[in-house]
Length: 266
Image (cartoon, rainbow, N blue to C red; front, side, top):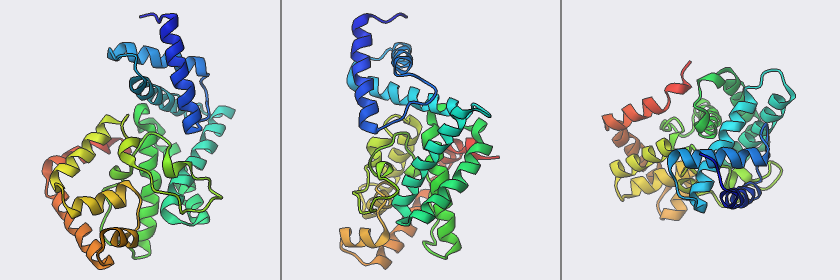
């Protein structure tokens, strides 16, 4: 279906604001081409031409274009895309580690895995997938150091396909930024959002859910959660352990998690 000049203008204005708000670099696609792809996506889905729908489709098409740039083997475009991806992953890891060198190391290891498994990823979930990979590097480091003995949910609660909040913290800046609200961040990854809603249903409106949400979604440390919820750090550990056990007992959730991560397996 063709696009009218009014549709193009409205969509173009929203996409321009989106790129400026996120500070996203265009790689392998022009702004006009992104507007065109977004309009095609809107028409295919039968969405209204409102700002929320335009942003949702625009994010999705940006992520698809970024994935395509990363697959441009042996080109300057691919090198630029992976450099940009490395910066993004380092910002994500820095928010968890609080250490620039550690964050960069996590990002470099994640880039190697991403490159090796690039063809296994759903392009529309590329940012969610890469975020999971770098956070798993962080969690593996923690396990090697004997810290946080409970296993994370393979990073699903940290997934997202938009760069906002902590991901926009410069690698040279302080790590005292306010943690991002990843509920807003995953609005364009329907599968990830469904999984988090399922987790919330299993845990209910409880302190277990609050601990899981603050740790995995908002990136807070156990000591920060303890201060926020006015409990001891040991109680936070215990509550997290019980929450993980409860989630593991939900067979449907475990099946959905395995399906979500099928693309991560060799």
